[in-house]
Length: 161
Ligand SMILES: Nc1ncnc2c1ncn2[C@@H]1O[C@H](COP(=O)(O)OP(=O)(O)O)[C@@H](O)[C@H]1O
Ligand SMILES: [Mg+2]
Image (tube, rainbow, N blue to C red):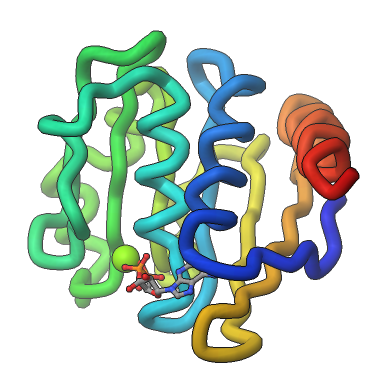
């Protein structure tokens, strides 16, 4: 459980994602919450970078494409953005739940819009605290994501020293 960890500048948010990647295993799902421009995509890019996904594969934002798959890293990664989804039927059509089941690591922006996450998932909330200030909170829901949150907290704490 991480409560309002400061990320002062985009690099800090990216770096937090990079550290989270060190902990992740196949099957881990991360739900991202926060306003437009909070840094959900940037954090995801940090995760992808931490997994070793080549930069050429990482795209800026999936807001216009619902799903991006990032190959070439330690684990495959699926990056989903539910912002533009209007009906749950669209998700069934796409087969999103199966995709999350089969993916290596998944990150889901606007995850609160539809109940697509598996029982055990990490929720990360990014709040805008200033032009380049963000605060990051994370909660595990289930044993695995609780372990991830604790390990991530330790890594983030270590960078503060
Ligand atoms: N501390 C920070 N953490 C994350 N992003 C930041 C920060 N400070 C400024 N920014 C800017 O905010 C924007 C975040 O964009 P993005 O990651 O696409 O947000 P979201 O996916 O939540 O809509 C980027 O333009 C980034 O440069
Ligand atoms: Mg985004």
